[in-house]
Image 1 (cartoon, rainbow, N blue to C red):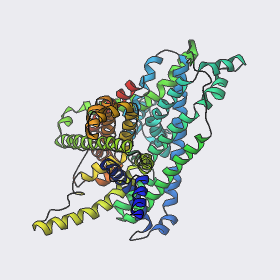
Image 2 (image 1 turned 60 degrees about the vertical axis):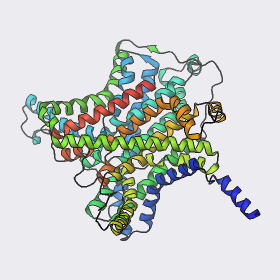
Image 3 (image 1 turned 30 degrees about the vertical axis):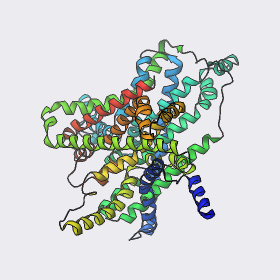
Length: 552
């Protein structure tokens, strides 16, 4: 009996005791991590190893372009977001109170929608070049020089304009939390406005800036619609080319593994860079820094500096697609658009509900278990958010197709009828991909909300005879439903905008708003793409308004 006792103690220490909540939490962790692990397995043991061919041909170019794009977009977004946050939190100027929230709106515009709008606005037949030819009497493109629109530089600008609010949100909060004492000391020592920003404000906000820039660079790696439209070859476009054109799953997995390593390296560098940088408040009386009122030319320059990213990131793309959408109202009643809308709402709604439900179950199960293994796996489940959608598409489709064929064979042997592919032949794979991709949002919201609930409430409920399920339903849910509702909306909005995973995993002839917009825009048919793009933006605005409300 002694060895058995030791075995039970070992299982208990690892968190593997036969507790349904703990077991369910471990099962959810496994399901989230399977796509990431399958990418590694497929890359290491491919049927057709084209790794030498990739290394000698396209992979170095894909990697170089991706790194340049990441660094450029991250640097530009960090500069714009940090500068705007500093101006908003330290100075008063015309429209400053409005711009504090308007600078969040570019988050509602997917980068690929911004790319379509920019090309339509600046191309040869667009209003800008048409106006120039009319004013100066030019007739053809040979008569004047105009920068190439579909280029790496344009992709950098579009992505930075769409993603800089991630840096702005975090940095604005960091600047607001800084005490006025440090700036007053610097000012008493003769430091001017620029010196106080560079020597006091910027170093104290560096962790927030680094975190925001890391999110921007991860979203840049995930992007497919923008770089594909601008004909920029990155690792993500390489996955699509190798899989869909060359029909080589192993090669796609090998490129996906490079993307995954790049993202993990980026996250690690971000955490290491902040590990030894810590600042503490030396007073328990925190007083926010005073805002200086600007007048004259400085006020106008500050207003323009904040208006420019808002105009490029939101006003320009939204006005272009809205004008196209209103030019032909009959396109709003297109059956294909309505079907795409229904598919988007259905799949996004199911994925959001399942993701949030699994997130709540996981966090509650970990809190109940009190074991080491579930707690160690809890942060690991957020890796899906860092993994690009194309990587998850590779990691999900192959094991799911294997399971689907075995399920079809089993049902046929059981009933004698051919059932077909039930998992990969339907939207099931899309739901799985969305759940894995955005599980970090649901898990983070549930963890933060449950962390604010006093443990004494749970103990009181258990002492009154409530089961664990009843405690979750009667005690926790009423207290966390606001956070759960926010998580539902945020996950749903991200599902609506997700393009790479949807392109890889959608069934044949299955369209969502994102894929319809991309397909129509790729055919230079922005008129048919614009109603779907407007719907995506309106859904995104709901999330931004909620975000603004929670960050007051």
